[in-house]
Length: 95
Image 1 (cartoon, rainbow, N blue to C red):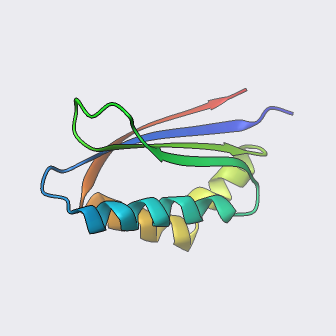
Image 2 (image 1 turned 30 degrees about the vertical axis):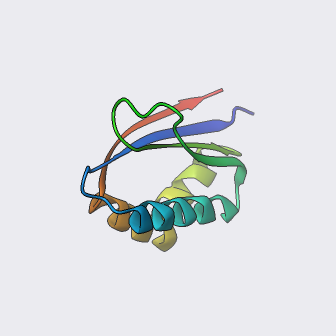
């Protein structure tokens, strides 16, 4: 059965504080404890040419596990938090 990959690049607004970035990292990392998430990694980018960027890579058992995660209250709360301090690009694909 194919697994579902979820990749997000968060580019933080220039006015974002260090405390907000730290909180965002903690919030994003906590989302990986959701049932159906097989792999979860959230790391600041080593390349700072475009500002402060966080990369998120999630691997889910299948699309239904991803959809359960995506529509969860936890995910919605973190998305609302990040919406205030960053813009992001998402790529989802099956393997």
